Image 1 (cartoon, each protein chain N blue to C red):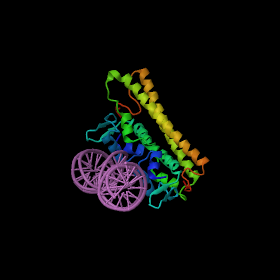
Image 2 (cartoon, protein in one colour; image 1 turned 180 degrees about the vertical axis):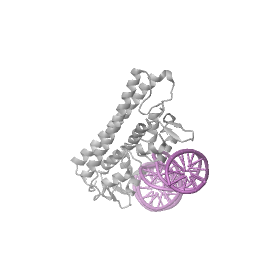
Image 3 (cartoon, rainbow over the protein chains, first blue to last red; image 1 turned 90 degrees about the vertical axis):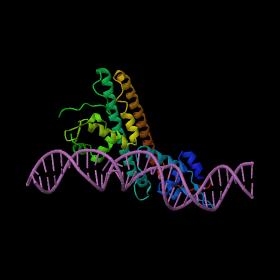
Amino acid sequence: MKISEVAKMVDLPISTIRYYEKIGIITDDYIRREQNNYRDYALEITHHLEVVKKCLAVGFSINDIKAMISKNGMSKDDQTRIIKEKISEIEEVQKKLEDSKENLYDILELDITCEDGFGKYKLKDT
Amino acid sequence: MKISEVAKMVDLPISTIRYYEKIGIITDDYIRREQNNYRDYALEITHHLEVVKKCLAVGFSINDIKAMISKNGMSKDDQTRIIKEKISEIEEVQKKLEDSKENLYDILELDITCEDGFGKYKLKDT
DNA sequence: GTAAACTATGAAGTATACTTTATAGCAAGA
DNA sequence: TCTTGCTATAAAGTATACTTCATAGTTTAC
């Protein structure tokens, strides 16, 4: 599979795909070269890149992902552990947002005293 | 509350707290100035910054957060409408977080059912 | 066979999110 | 009072994650 096909399938710019190879997010396992030196990608590259995209979307860094990819870097248990940690972080955010929402509903009922979790607070005398 | 106290409580560098103010992540609502021009923070700043931190940790950008913070300075007459809008916004965020969580569970699933989500694939002849 | 379209590389440029530096005023203890 | 430590600002610097540019070889369509 040529680079433009991969780009289309995973909806990433060609430049990004080459960049991911350069920094080690795409390993040689997924690529061989044709006679003309063009990259030839394994079909599994699309799955790999979808996972990378999702990881980036939920706040993992390139380095986090490289650590997960690295053969002798991180065990599967470690991968599972940090993903579960990330889920916990998200659940904390969800809780905070839920609190904010509750505050807003209170305000609707009780007339406006303050705004929400991102909102306006009056400074108090200390 | 002085800036160093806030920094300690929310575990952020002082420079970051000043930076957040500069770019509008911390609004004037949370700050007044003492005679000596030192910042004096409202107690609620800690809650605000915890939420900001967690949002950043799960992949929101500064601009996402600014969008969530804004719309607080609108007309008083329409406060009820604004609050309802805010609730809708929060629900959108919650939806986004739910998606992120699903993605993470997908990754866990992939790790468990496939040999490894980041694993080694052999190139196939096409 | 030639122009358009695709591939390659290395290097420079960009956006985001901070951090550090330089300079200076204010505060509290010895 | 003097020194240490906290505060302030503006501006420059840094790290991350890409993107664009310059240049050049290859393939495809006409």
